[in-house]
Image (cartoon, rainbow, N blue to C red; front, side):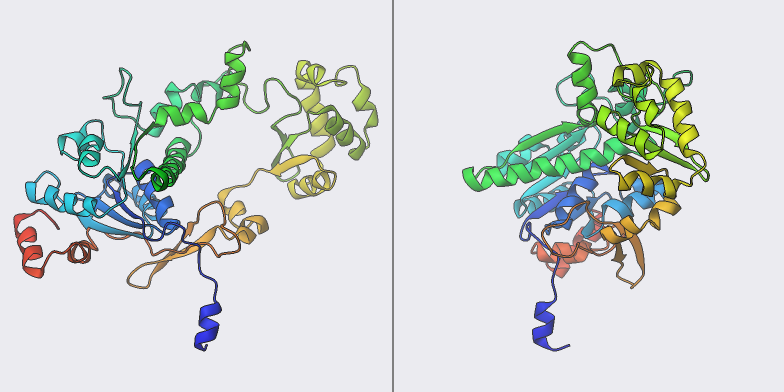
Length: 403
């Protein structure tokens, strides 16, 4: 390939090129926010304790957290409990635009690296803190994980079957959402800094994110609706809505609660009389007679495969989706066509598949950053770029300040 052809090869969009980020996070929320910035072109330095991010010590799923949320970063192993280690951190922060942290409450303050201290010295820094329960209420000092936020935000109270225990969502959705919403706040603050010249202190929490994800249901309740409860599949005020319907080889979900859509469903299934049936004539009546409605849905669809149901209903603009396993979703033509599956390449040439950001910037290809680094893999390089000489780096290693 000649030089001209190489120049024409499209590159991933990097709108944050030149932005430097310090990632003090652990597990998902903090590292995830920093990785969003990395995938948008920022240079991210992950500061880990000498023993590494806590995710490195909880088995296979923890390693998966690192593969998912630490791609494209440099890792430096730094003992922030030592004076020499903190001095290294300060030097790195001095040349950075953003600091992200989600350590246990009070941890960064005890190290002298909290937002007030950092922005007191460097007002242009954008400092994002993600906590479990916020920094103002009585629970501000409680540690918080995804599951606690699901429980205390009301999410678990509306998830599951009515006669069973409350259920969590099957994946750490609050952690993941906090990562993206935290990154969104950082982007807004960086944009604001372009106008004012000053950074910002940003706070969010898993509890607030969990509440925000339920905004419609909360607004319904705040507007006078009865307190929502668990009903399994379906929606409390609409039918058929989010109904799980068995098919010949699995299940689909179906929503056709607008009267026009319900009438269309009846025509498609050759059951026009159902549209004027006194049990199903309006949405309110369909909600009232939900059990009978579900029996009708099973009669109409159970002889078809899931793919046949989706194809038939989709052709007539009726919302339906096949309930797929991870294996089935992986091989879905829509997932394959999305380009979300990317290969992350490690320094030794090995690679693993991961998920890119869930959006594209124009026609640019998705970013395919390097694999997540090993703990301290970039310590020497980061220190050298920060102006430390070889003798200074060796002295830091002997003192145990870096690893």
